[in-house]
Image 1: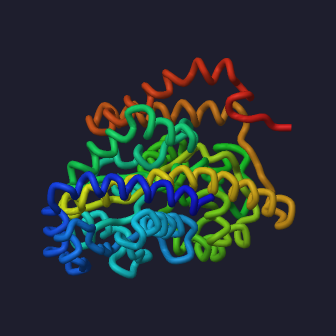
Image 2 (image 1 turned 180 degrees about the vertical axis):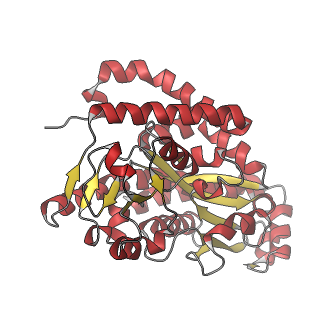
Image 3 (image 1 turned 30 degrees about the horizontal axis):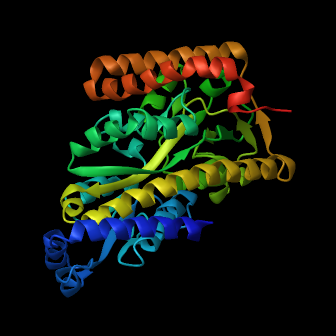
Length: 378
């Protein structure tokens, strides 16, 4: 099925190539002349596309389930262009640290980078909303908002301020929740623990709730739980958590994940490198990202279902929940945190207003479809 889809996209790309290159190939010639990783200037001059290889750094380490999305995107792009446009993936730390990746791409040190926008919330908190949200969107909501509502424009507006294009590669379902060494059944339980939470807004909400947040890099999460540096923490969804084997050191699982009900990972692209691409390669790049995003949405949901069953049925993980009153308190606190940030940061308000406008348009449909729209439980 993947190969059939790739063949269809390749056919379309080749049609676009003929149209774009029929009147000359100045863009391709410029790319061939200026990129150290580009060859095939003669082919470009004859009306064919050059061979291009870009470097793609990542915020994700080798073996991480999220890094596999970066790799899958590169694979699809190569398939769509018959190997003419390739992206070489580099795990976190191989080209630069995760914290350096934004500037590396923005400044053109490398052409592109696989990211999670929450890492850039120190530059602007609006980036966090483009990658995660508390107690609201699902992975499907992000997908619909991006491709059918106003979402993609928000990414263009925000990353564009830093000399970058942006393309989502996966819209994640809800994170697992907080994995801990002792059970969590209330806000009061969390107030007595040291907990690792990602996301600036989640940290602000947690502070309002009296929860002590401890900063721990994802790569150190397993050891921190094992050694008692922290009592609980989150990383991502069940499949991603399993890639770090967190269930080995945290037998309790408080769900669902109010601090990240869904998320987005994507690829940042330097605008100058993008502008030098032939139009057909730009089209192929966008197609590869779109295909990857749809494919990974299904993959993430399915993998999380499978791993959840394994953790509960085979590995002895105990799932706990908060009571309704505490959930309502958390919901109100998350909303209050967002409203306060809207009053501080115009960019944050721009993105948040767009997301809430989508929700307004979706709520009536959700009400009447109920389980028929978003799924039944036995």
